[in-house]
Amino acid sequence: MAGLPTVEAPCALCGGDRAEAMWTTPDRAFAVPGTYTVARCHDCGFLYQRPRVRDDRLADCYPDHYPRHQEPSPRVPFTGSPARIRAVRWALARGLGYASLRDDRAGPLTRLRARRLLSRLRWSCPPWTGSGRYLDVGCGSGGALGVARALGWQVAGIETDEAAAAKARRFTDDLYVGDVLDAPFAPARFDVVTALHVLEHLAHPVAALRRMLDWVAPGGLLIVEVPNAGGLGARLFGGAWSGLELPRHLSHFTPRTLARAVEQAGGRVVWCLHQAKPRYYLRSWSNCLRDRGLGGLARLSEVRPVYGVLKLLLELGLPLVSRAGRGEVIRIGAVPARSAAQATC
Ligand SMILES: [Zn+2]
Image (cartoon, rainbow, N blue to C red; front, top):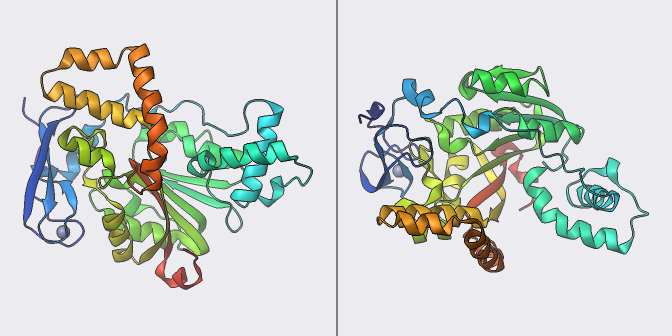
């Protein structure tokens, strides 16, 4: 079946026009017609979809039931037993700057539990910054906005999908429906701006980063999260890697190319976290088996007890992958170059 119309756009990082095709796959998740190719730029090594879906047809890559547009209630961290909630409050206060949650009566068990929770909370809660003004770019139905609001932030969002934006209005009326490049927010208006699994979907990632950095107030932070095309999964599985997500992902960043994009947009990366969840590898593994005509084996590895055992085995080894800086997902903190001199690495 014919795919969506595409365009031969040059490399979004260096403007180079020479690129070598690496992997061609169909849409494995939502069966958008056609096959799509990831190419590597000859000049700078950037991986990107080429040819890529034409700007005016990008919305056709997303079905009505696209998960980001249908998120359930936000995962607010204050859930579970009173002891867990005490540990969450301590972790947020001591590890992420939420001074108002500080409770010096916390005992050693609470502190120990908080230390274990903190590594997960870093991925779901923005570090408290400035006076708590927060913008989520590509907010979908508002999962991150709901969490931030529960943590005391004044929240705002940008979303292109109208149905998803209508759901995000549960959390704020300060919502722009449209392209990030057209959003009318004033410069330096926010203490934290996030773009979580958004940048790889955009046709003009450097221009989008420039806009986002412009909205960051002095002393503030831009947080960007993307799949890591430089991680172990991409290396092992190549065209079967679950992070390719064609045709929705137009760019495939590594820590190096993401840092370069931030620099070109007038910013600087000040920290980088890696995450390696078993489900990413198991999805890639299933893709790999199906590509080799082993659909039966793929289905077997998705049966609950088998999947559980594989997941457990992976959980034992994956912390090492994250520590080695080869995770499946990277989250970076960046600051505008104008304030980079004050940042700590
Ligand atoms: Zn390039």
